[in-house]
Image 1 (tube, rainbow, N blue to C red):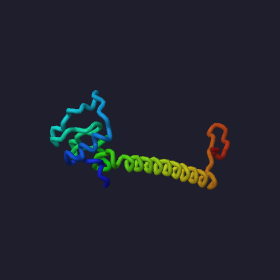
Image 2 (image 1 turned 30 degrees about the horizontal axis):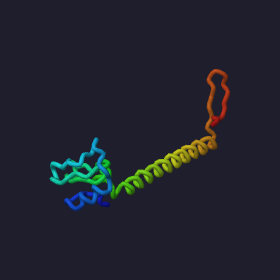
Image 3 (image 1 turned 90 degrees about the vertical axis):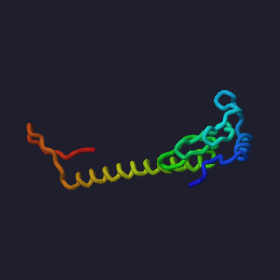
Image 4 (image 1 turned 120 degrees about the horizontal axis):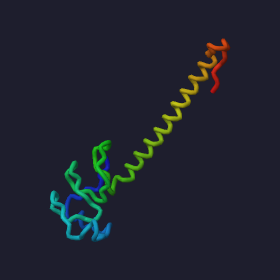
Length: 125
């Protein structure tokens, strides 16, 4: 829900120009946004989905349903990091439950039978 760094007017565009220098390769000084009609600061881009220019634009995230830019990038990285932790926790919890079920079934007297020799034996891990 944090503002990604929307450039709403020419004053914000001038402030953004001071933060990031133009490299004259990808970001040129004379570039203007055709949709917003403002002079584009370096590292900014117009998002077609949100229909506004975003400072230090990274991408439009469909999971957050908003742009990821200068002001919410740290929150987006926190979002990803927490999801990685949840996936790791879920994996370990799933393996623990699976291992527990295997142990429980082995203790209930599950036996394998060899048809050729007629020998019975318990499963091993």
